Image (cartoon, rainbow, N blue to C red; front, side, top):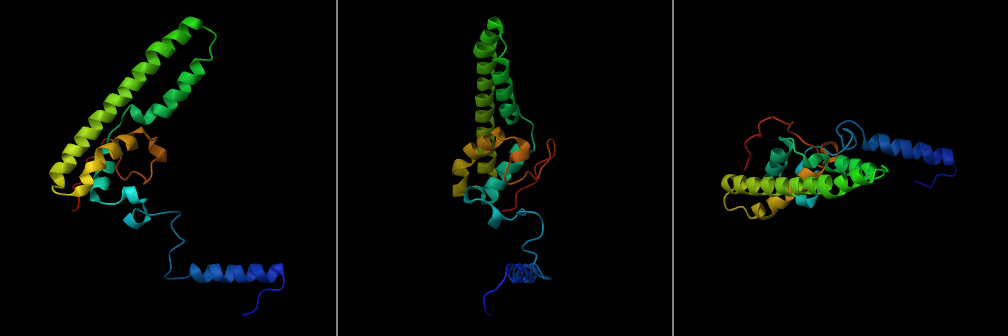
Length: 161
């Protein structure tokens, strides 16, 4: 097959190649993005221990997931020209928010690591699961990857091991 001579021929060949790739029986390009399969995840998201940690974090609401919104609000509040208000925001609201987030991160990390250790005895990937859960909790829920499978308040499914 020779190279296309015109732009029109090149585009026609491109469309035909795309149609062949996306033809029946080949659903590679359908679905709008990666599905919930381990092979589509980043390497740090692989495995049943990490899936369990994601489900535990996604099944609960936390103050930490609103950290980005709180930070933007604090920055905007600092622009108000009231010095007393700026002092309160800087020395009371911001530190209280940081202490809350750190305490919540420690709590979720310890509880996820303890539960994962009980559910997956002898699994070497339990080692970093606490930090993984704490960092996931800091992310805005809609921006978490892999996407949450569990709704807030829903029971965490038993892991498949």
